Length: 184
Image (tube, rainbow, N blue to C red; front, side):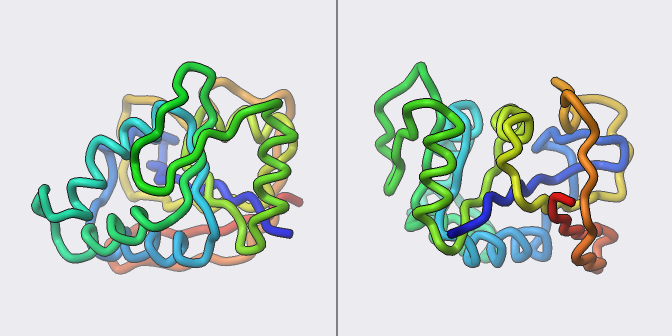
């Protein structure tokens, strides 16, 4: 049985806007290694559409990108990608699947059937799954930036505080702190 891991970039003031943060080979290598360790990706429709707009072009060489980004894109092409949405049924991006049915049951089934675990990268979906108590591990890349704007981690709130157990930290040379927590 696998784990559901929520991984996200976050600034010191909680901003999760994908346009804010340090984008370099080291941060991409971190996420590539994390993706390599997991058996599938899980996203909401908005994140999926944002990803499918860019990464297939990088993987195919249609969009120019540094080597670390191309490596991520090629591996992402092959990785099973599951999308939670009630407004879309067509997913032409390679190895993409619609995760339908009741949210908690369908996510539990996906995680149970994915021994290496599932990597979650959508903030609204993460909030919904956290409220259901389904997230096992949290991986935050904490960027040394105060954004002062943008969407925040858990903007929609949670019914109660989450207490987590720190299991690992790693300082990247660019000032980013990679922190891994398990649900306490």
